[in-house]
Image (cartoon, rainbow, N blue to C red; front, side, top):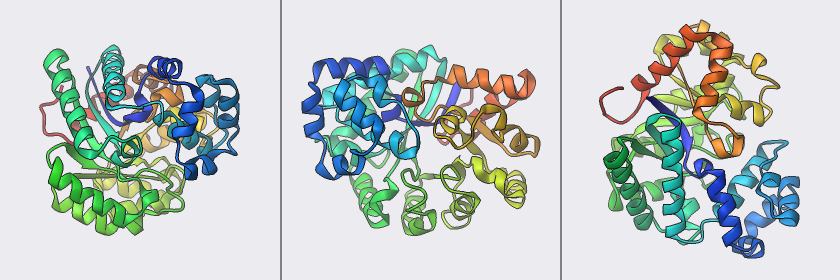
Length: 331
């Protein structure tokens, strides 16, 4: 059984579930539910334009760049028109996790996204807690949650959300991450938020070195003082950083197919995974948003084995257990 450490809840709701929601929810209703600021931001994306004409999910899941992916991700949110829809999505997700032989997963959750849908933090906490208890009791599957304040909303908004979490569901999340627009909302702007999260006892990770370069990773380490790096693949652009990551044993949460899908690297053969591992950097292999990148953990492990061979790959796969945040026995 496997452990996965970097996987977004919304990006993991199975495609079959989203397609069924499209049948149940008229396309015009879906579009009308989106706030105007989001419609304006993403209306120029070709995948959104094609999707709104055809109503086919396959047209939405086509990306030229990160903005196209973000547009698809945000659009999918509005297929959840009720708390019950989210519950149904989580049930479908559990089926996929079990099929992938995952027995421990850390799922990234952005409460502000669900707030747009009318699902407040208290409701969301209840839904997630019940899903965790149900999956563990029925299947032995541990579902842990990582809080994502969404960096696009700014540090103060993140601190406000953290206070709400402390008051409403202080034991729900095992850690915090920083997702969203890495280029325009750099890690160094969020020191106060991460200081607060550390004081709450949350484990710390942050998306860095995905759409921005090595300095973003340095900032996450030196300013936010994270324990792991979400993605971090562009550490390969800085020899000193590679050596530092290896010496300090700071793990990277790598997502191979996501990097190719978003054009960070043109092919798996040109991905720096091999160099990073050979130079002693600890890594885990993850799916990120498997529905949007058309992958699974099984597929990611197949790619891993094709690039590094069976022996090194098995060491990496087993090593994920030692990098997890929640305090449970390893597999």
